[in-house]
Image 1: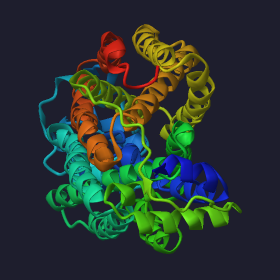
Image 2: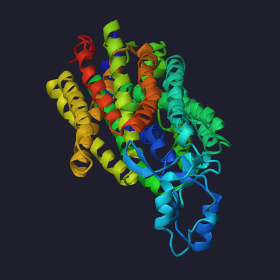
Image 3: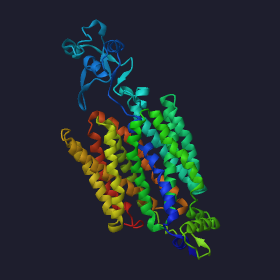
Image 4: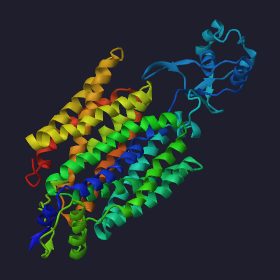
Length: 508
């Protein structure tokens, strides 16, 4: 009986048809990156301090800037980043009864009194040094005691990822890749608009879970589909290329965020591509491998003939066809350690990206530079894995990422460019490690359960995504560099799992 690999070889293992399909499907990775790390801009926490109605009145009357009023009326305090203006308490006094005048906004008398006067909470809200822009943090006042709600925004996305990956993975194995993909994108379109129109923060979190439910599952369906449409020898190439477009999205995101200053409209822009993906119904066929796994041989052969026609090939074999996948035996060890590596990579990767939003520099420039650093990861993977296998590049990527995190934590802020360069090297390393563990994960499962298997294993990645924001933001309050030490330690510890994960059932 002729295997599907024999038929696909005649039709073209990676011809014009597959190139077209892969190119179109790679676009799915771009908005996925927007959703995955968009919290850096949607949930940006700018410099803030307590609003005082009396000070606001004086500022308007005198024509002061926000910075002038802050220098004159907000006391200093010690924090993990050094001496800063107090963000969560204000002076309990009547400013109209002081010697503060329009001509002397930085009165020496007032400055000398600031540290001795009684304090009170921010009962009248906050002022934000974020003129002309709005994040959900500034809209809902998620600062000080409520700052941990920002962590929930990203955690709820990962909860949606976790549940959606399993549910949509099951649907894709049972009802087909394209049906599940199209249904998922319709769901994402509805949920994304609901996120953008959320009336309050509780509603925002609920809709965020629904949004995440569709986004991750749809992305994984696309990943599995393109790897099933090409010959086995081309799977890693299209898989890595698919992830490279995620890095391209990382480059586009800061440009979008710069020109779209409102988080709600930014959410709409994140959602529009998923609505456009519904047009794939007319351009993308079902996976022939999945059809064969469901004993739909006639339909699989028809789609393969269409692929051959577009590739300008002719099929000579019209015999019975069976799925020709080389089904690897899945061991408990390979499954377990693939999941462990997904978890660690997700925590470190998300943590390093979200850290850009709390460093205090130009978040748009910092994000763009870090995104540029990601692009070489895909090329390095393609250059190395065919020549020296997976183990050595994977180990090297983890060593580099872990060492860079640890070194960056102890480089003084005065050596800014060195600190930034080492951090970028760490970002490159963890990107390589993350991309490698994702495509190796697809090689562990037979066609009939591939989508579900990949999805179940990636749940540990989503659990990492739930933990990452709490780990980053709460530890950074203690010491800004403490998360880097945790990330570096986690990455180096992951290496002990390497040789078990890269089991004999998956090529080295």
